[in-house]
Image: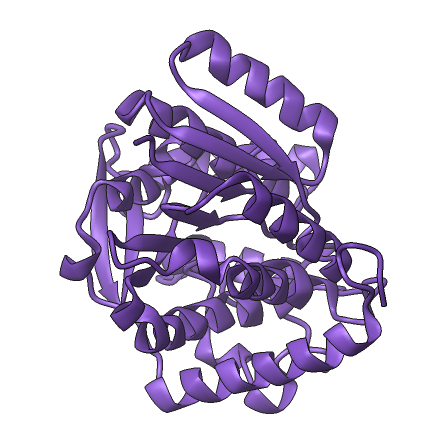
Amino acid sequence: MRKVVLVTGASSGIGLALCQRLLTVDEELHLCLACRNMAKAEAVRSSLLASHRSAQVSIVQVDVASLPSVLRAAEELKQRFQRLDYIYLNAGIMPNPQLNVRALLSGLFSRRVIHMFSTAEGLLTQQDTLTADGLQEVFATNVFGHFVLIRELEPLLCHSDGPSRLIWTSSRNARKSNFSLEDIQHSKGREPYSSSKYATDLLNVALNRRYNQQGLYSSVVCPGTVLTNMTYGILPPFIWTLLIPIIWLLRFFANAFTLTPYNGSEALVWLFQQRPESLSPLTKYMSATTGLGNNYIIHQKMDVNEDTAEKLYQSLLELERQMKVSVPKADGRS
């Protein structure tokens, strides 16, 4: 039987590279592209099928920032499939990033330069907005939409005949100091991306505690510093022209600079080939690249508290309950 793999954010960047690499590993997969833009998704599907003729590639339209869209997509997936073997929770945004130029210039000439570029710590803030559902957009996209999708697809994920996997795209930028249980949407802060990625690390822990006995396992990945549309939007083009040579040079001193989506997807592909029972729920699996371009995996223990993880899970459950009261059901009934 073909394994069924669902990938959110599959039309570009890490998600696209992941899809290409997964079909190279196992061309007999059924790969389902979960994308917001159907035109882009159709183009990706055609390209994948042209290079992997025995694969099955389908599309489901979903905007993970929109609860009605997530509910509709979940209903459609439950009608199509009897089980899902993997969900790559990869879609994410970093809207309106603002660079702290003073921190950048001072960091360039300090001992922290490698750490600064690896994590963007102290460099970036974002101006978040509200979704049509009234949620903070970064939180809705990077955390809550995926959480609801998992909950809705639970019948396809929890089986006694073999494990299913959740694999989150997290970040080195996930920092405990930017997350608060009193403000899980980070509505009062200026680093919603970092907060959301720390929330996914916590949620990963809570999901494992709750679902491992039912055959569902969760892992988190950091793709490293990758030059995608998201990162290119942080700085003006002329600054990237100046920084690119420096970043390439830094690869010889730090392993976080994976730079390309192909390299950044290394840990996501590696996890596809591992037995979930052998993995630690408290470990982040990080893509790394040597100065000569060789890829490998780093295992890093996460700075997460299991009680905090459970409290976040309960907060998300309560928010889901409140939201579903006001959002029409997938079939259009209120």
